[in-house]
Length: 143
Image (cartoon, rainbow, N blue to C red; front, side, top):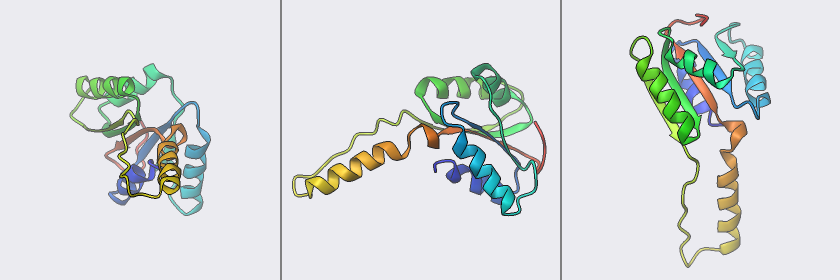
């Protein structure tokens, strides 16, 4: 999951996390949070939030949020970036946008292998792996 790339470093650094998954695929985020809690992560250190776009932008602008990591569309990323920049405080923002990376296939490659891996790569980071990750600056802090 792409989320792991932001969640694990955030937790290891001692931060509380707010995870806003894609509304089309909320289940992976819920299950991930449950797995962390079952493994002993204190309650409310990783919280899953289901928000509408306007509420998500308000949260990204909130001064209690120290860092925002977003994976999704270019339009969504622009909105998040703008909200974070114009909101209270000064925060870091990491954006992974678009998901339409080109691939070059050399002439000497096994075509069946390349096709299989290109399709896997294109689907691996689809909607169920994307979401908004907001990191607070105090462990257990609720926003």
